[in-house]
Image 1: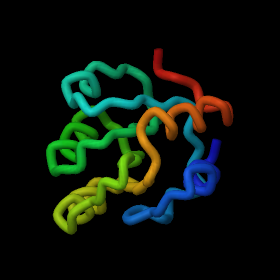
Image 2: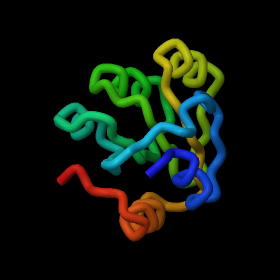
Image 3: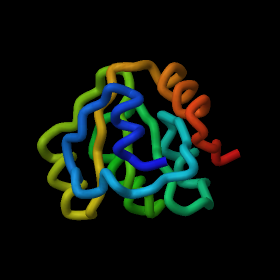
Length: 114
């Protein structure tokens, strides 16, 4: 699935990395626990999280995750956006709950990490 399709499906807003919209993504993972994110061993995944702080960006960087959706109306701060741009990440904001966003992506064909 292209990220552009994900954004449209979730009625979301891209706040950083719009040049990634034509990128493909096959798997997603939803978590607010960054310790769980560090255990992911798949490549090219989409992270859904309600944890909107610099630690999320740094954890994603360590896990080589470049695609992040903030759910539950969470907003990226200017510092988060700057760090994401330095790491060539796409940041997306979505008003839906993590449960709803995950379900919509799953129904559209997105695969879970496990």
